[in-house]
Length: 151
Image 1 (tube, rainbow, N blue to C red):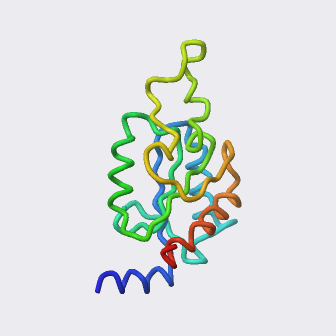
Image 2: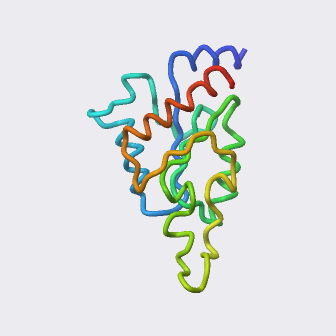
C-alpha cells in the first residue's frame, strides 16, 4: 500500500533532500536558491526541499565529505526509499575541491573522505564552484527518470 501511494505521489511531486558534508556552503546556498527563490521557484513544478530521508526522492549532496560525516551520509542514503537518486553538486562533492589537498606539500588532508562517490553511489554530477542554479535544476531534472520510472 505504501509503495503504491509513494508511486502516485512521485508522479505529482519530487522531494529533494539537501545534505551538506563540509566546505564553504556556497553550493548549499545555490541549491536553496534554485528551489526557494522567486526567480527560479522550482516549487511551482512541485519540487520541494525536505529534511526527512524517508520523504526524499533525490539526495543532493554538497561539500567535500569529511570523515566525520561520511558514516552519517551513508546512513541517510540507506534511509531513502527506492527508487532514489543522488546528485553531487559542486567541485568539492565531485573531487574534494580545495579541501582535498588542504595539506599542501604535506599531501592530502586527513580530514576528507570524499568525493561523494567514494561514500555512496552518485547518479548525476553537477560541476562548478559554486554551480549556477540553472545547472543544479538541470541535474535534478536529469535524475528524475530514475526516481519516477525506477531506471
